[in-house]
View 1 (cartoon, rainbow, N blue to C red):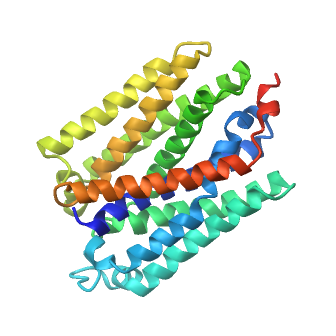
View 2 (cartoon, rainbow, N blue to C red):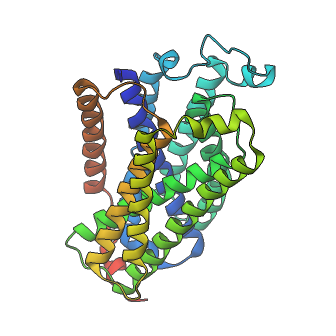
Length: 316
């Protein structure tokens, strides 16, 4: 794995969490319930790291040909898809995706009209997350174009964002209302089940259609190593569901459930993205360095943003 490949993996993972955090915020504001309060500061901080990811995207633009096989060699792609995947148009779209998300993050964290901003934001962010999944992930193997992939991939990002926000919230010392955490626990469990169902539905559609260009995507991920990663990923998801299903709210159960959900997401992302080449120490160090920089920016934003601790501690 070279440096550009390592940066690409970090970019997709972190931008997914940032965009997923925006979805968590918007749904919470639209529902007009205070259950969002315990994780609101965490979700806002993750969304506000998007300018850093825009800079990372600019770096990746110089190595586009090392990430996507269609750059400079479209092969036998249909003419419409070849035009759509032209490098210039691709970079313009990517910049638009990130700029829209940056604008929405700033708007959501500075407006008093949260419900209005969230309604408009969801209308904008849904196609952004869908098409960014096609462009940044699915186009690595451009002969398959799935109408369900964007939704399925996006659900995984929302799951990771919520699980990460819950995990950080529970590791803090501020008191949080157990009843509010019960709502978040049900939301996390619902996302786990919905994510599992949509990925299974995606597989079932491909299996029933049995089209070579679609089946090839799964065949490439069906060797012993990849099947092991996939098995571990869904074992972690099942463990998270089992931990969260019992009634009542236990801090340790929610800590374990959210951590297991994050581990599931990380391993599943490896299976989807299919890193090319062996993981070198340099690539691993680069991934950890960029992730550490993102965490540092995240922590700095958390220190200057409102905590909403009093609202989170109140009973409904």
